[in-house]
Length: 523
Image 1 (cartoon, rainbow, N blue to C red):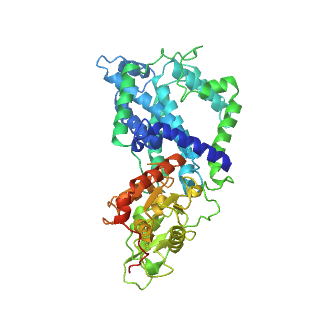
Image 2: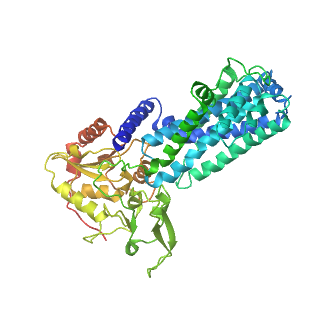
Image 3: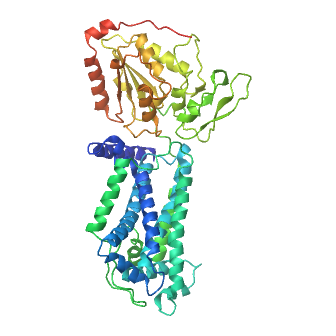
């Protein structure tokens, strides 16, 4: 199963790369499926509120209400109906694609299990909301869907035979039916909004909205589609008569032909098994998708002797796993960091944010205020010292890599030292200067693709630290002409090309003006 997930993830990265060639990485719609789905939900809610004000919730007026909007000479009714219809289709498609992509990337295990589990019921709520929306039009398609749904429900023993008859006879159908459908159609989206709020509760710095340019373009495309291809009602529903042929919305009504082609119980079994399988995925025997699987994944740990309560680690944690609590020792600080182990992804981003995570300390076995037990700051410094001292070739570079992207140990040679990290943002900026102080001619940092960090925010935080926009900052005196960052993901060629480009940029004059230094330690 782990191998299958890895194959899917490679396919996802290849598809992401294709979109990157057409869009800027930060505006790649493939990276914003969840936020685009939320945008569609908001469009649905707003357009639905307006439509409700114009809708007649009665047997005789329901169909006429839809036709009146459809035939509005000012095209505003067409725009309103189209936005509501196509945003509903977009919501379904984007939600399913979001689920598939998260599954392909293995984002249903570990600390992400809650987000995965809380998202599965939203699929059923989404389907019910869309299905009842078609019923409110009360055309031939709505009658077919109502009847087919009733027959499907009737296959379950808990439902009565009377259920179908209520939709097949004119005497059984009354205005209360439409009032009930309106109640469901309005109430379910409210549950959806609440469900989305629950869905993102275990994430920090949630990207709930797509970038402004992407949101504006998406809204414009939906509006244009609404005007060019208007959403139209079929003929009025004739109770007791179901049309032999009619057009369907395959995003919400595909269940009905499936029941017709198989059986109601077969579709119930398929729906139940699929739902249970999705709910069970976090507990399937799937190992974390790490390049260096031999390295144990353990939660970050706080060392109070080196924690000054600055709260940078809590601010930068992508999963809200680090919080600040009142001090429990005798040091003269008000707060201390506290790690909620159940939420910690062991990404090391908090280590990169800690001011005590600096190699320029006289202590032999340095300890940071917050550490990853499997890859301590002391071990990182020792590994960097050992790797750089072992270099013997020209144009010596240090390559800091992300374990989640790919294994670049094969790039290590006489001129290249490779230092793997849990995440590129685990690297404190001071280690870059330290590598140059040890004698490296330059430093290359590589990780997941841009705006696609496995731990959500690693690339963003690292770029801001290097640009001096976020603590801890890379000092202004750092030799930026000898520092390169490449968000390559699994692209070996991009990493090799960046190494070559940096070596080509390091001229003999630059080498002479920046001779190698011996490792020094500051207090």
